[in-house]
Length: 422
Image (cartoon, rainbow, N blue to C red; front, top):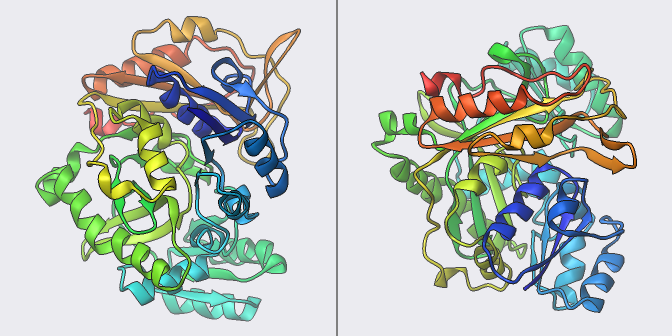
């Protein structure tokens, strides 16, 4: 099968690695990719925000499946163009991708589908923001309505900081003020063909930059899967997944279908387990990062078969995905200054030594290779991923590997999956 993966981050590298691990005769292409992805797929110079260019490449190269990694190409209508040309694509069209592209759109769909979520106010002015903050009280939750690369959310007890955050995004459009929901968070992915859904294994990520969930929000500093503590409230992880499928995923997918905007791709549900029950924090229209890096290494079902079935409307013929008993932990190595002003261009060393640790592989997030070697090109640079029979061993492997990598000024959290390991 000829497969084209769009994107340049660790999520896309994880997808490529999962496809490569199937052992089948896949011919893999990636655009634009990164240095790590270039080891496992043929890199293509394509503007992933140009639907016509992507469709032309897919047709000229007889691509069997296009997998869209990041959200921006979806909002740009890449999937719509490919479907019009008869090319199987895993990723929702522009209209359905508003589940991520517009928080207000997602809230409307949830209300219509009777999906449990928190109260929210759509604010267009500073006065409306202030009134909503006072109505909900602290902690204050402010979200950019549109795409913000995982950095559009603030949760704070500081009213002035909440207002300042809102004012950063108001010139570009409205913001959402939400009630604060308390409880452990869970990320759950659903593969959908517009009618049928298949759930993957839950994961938990770590959004804050520093240990103990301190510091600013980031795109994610680490993750782990599965979540054995779900059994304490739901009897088992499987029962939790079944509950969320019936009360969240299927109602949303059916509502979108009723509105003529079928969701074909990956529906990411960001959930919080409150004392009143499961509530949806947000939806994304693509695989989450860094959760993908710990979910896919545990997937036993061939990823290509699952995503092609979704893209071609035959998901009902596929059984529920199967996962290995092994656990997975990923720790993100970030550049100095991330997330505010990351330093780039610095050399990276020690990757071979890191990958020699048992059960460890590395997903590249922001790397480039030149005659001088490997260098960092962004904020989140590498994901060190470790699998093992148990969490203490997986954590030990991940941190041993990350200790072997050299990147001047880099930082990482030291408490990823610490509680579940204990």
